Image (cartoon, rainbow, N blue to C red; front, side, top):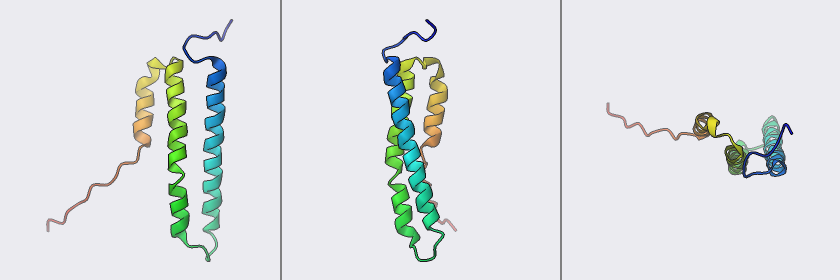
Length: 102
């Protein structure tokens, strides 16, 4: 058998996790695209739209976390440095406050 189970997560659970996270990410992406297209009209206030887009970060982070955890448990132990780099590069860094010393 070519694709035999090697880890704790069965193949069917990994497939469901991949499908669910893909659907969640595509829904977030399509909703963001729809919101950004509504900015083309002059009658829409951009501040509430940006707040709605900002609320979509939580589901995206949860979907990415579920996928990363499933892949690590599946046997991606050799890929841990790549996963941690991708994880930490996707976390937004808050700018430090620069004091005026002039």
